[in-house]
Length: 482
Image 1: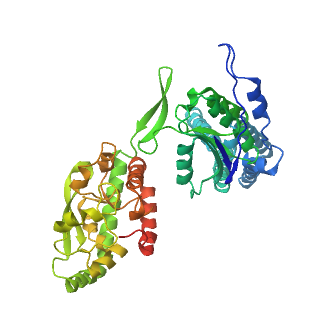
Image 2 (image 1 turned 90 degrees about the vertical axis):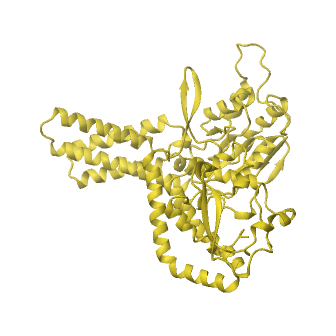
Image 3 (image 1 turned 120 degrees about the vertical axis):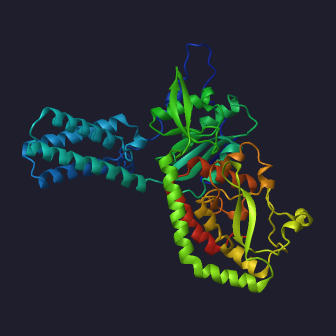
């Protein structure tokens, strides 16, 4: 039973957040209310003013008035609009919880919807649009833009959210390690219990009791609960309710990790459910990715032709054998294809795998050695610089591969895949991928698969561009290249 904040271990007092419920008519206990109303929300501090968006909303009102003066809106109409915007923003502040007020785009979306409805009504019912009405629409459009700008600025300023993790020790520590270097959050504390302790026990209750104590030390923090069946446990459920009353963001992680598609909350009957939506599966997204991949590959082949010619000459002068190495790999949905690479090993490398099997240093079904005796002198340079991968641009041009995706595996490897690992074959294999820019050969098998599935389940063109840019740095650094 441990409570950790900012790297310091503190003893957890043996106190219970929720007392045993004697009858069905009792819901919670007075201690819950006293505990959470004692959390300082800091509404009188500058920190709270910034976090709740008051400065940004004030700037929105000022920008609205300035726009009205620029377009020459009548003083009476401008005054009415200004008061209307103030009322609109005031309603938005009241309707949103404190942790969403600064960065929410909902006020702007609602305003745009109202403007669209008003414009449609005017077009239907009015023959002539007056200058003042046109000016009012212009001013309110500017207001919507200013609200979006305010939200984006607040998101950038407050992007590193202090986060307190609550749950079993193994799940919390694993999550804290994964989030260690993220730019959008910082784990400031952990409230954990032994992973063998059942949810609902007195031990869990006493740990949950410590959450408000840690929250008093960090302003603007949120709580992430990682326990399975969290909302079925009375103490964790009352923790979530108490945090809600104190306007502190509380998130409950699902047990699905990264291995599913986008989830969308919905209802079936009176039950809450999660609908699974495959990412960017529609034809337009696939067509854009295919066009981008092939256009980039064609351009890269033309630009890199002199370099590829030099590499081919170096291989020819170094050892006997073909310059291009062809090997059958498993493509999308298990369909085999021939992959092209610059030869970096001796000609009989494939026949020597069995004799080197005991020296394998890779995890899972992969075979890799840091000092592979089959690699030639030129081949070692090609592997360290990833120049041996350049001919795969032709695979991309032919449509067998993509620029970004899970690396193409051998049939001997994919035959050992479990059902959930087979999921990585649902997209085209790529020249580079998420795990290549996150550690390359230094990653464990499970971690590389987790990253591949994260890409499969969340890919989009922006992610592809980001991975391509990171690949340049990884190649120049040579870290993790065998």
